Image 1 (cartoon, one colour):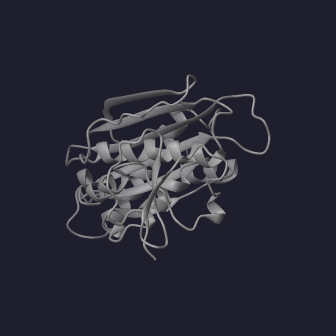
Image 2: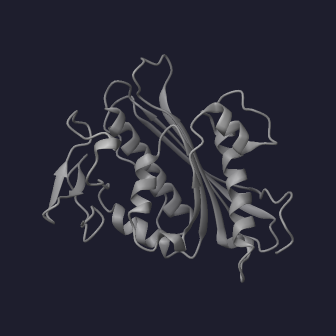
Length: 253
């Protein structure tokens, strides 16, 4: 079956996404409509304009990624999995959806005080980075600059009305020294205007943000920018140089 990524051309229409229909044609739809299918019902996977090209450039970056997401980001994983050749980039993806599962993923780090914040996303990215290198180090040749740890933690629309924000913290951690010393933390925080989108649309916007963040972190795209459709939307992006999390890594540098 043809997918949304095959022969997808960038579109200029504001707020619309490309969907490849079963007859092979491309159509533009709004992710804000309640008629958008839930993930369990999706037969065609939508992409943001230019998304297919971003994924191809990410896969061609030569990086190897370990990705961990919780609370949102399902569509980003679908876009990756639906792309031929994704194994050249993706080592593993983990979705620790419950608090107990996320605690176990980050162990021996202590359970976080807040599960959707920058510090938790950073702990998740650190663990993802370590696992990416440990996996890659089993194959030769590999150096620590070849890997990236990606994390996303979010809270979005659900059946119950939430008192707090609908938002997501996401991080891509890389290293630019072969000895495993200094590296970069590409971090972003996306706040979504509550009650303006369906759950599908909120996950779509967060997935689009993660797609652009990862593409930039691996050198495949410029700094990520997002169209903010509603007054309560907010997007913050930063890059910080830090020490890489190389504790307990095997000596394959």
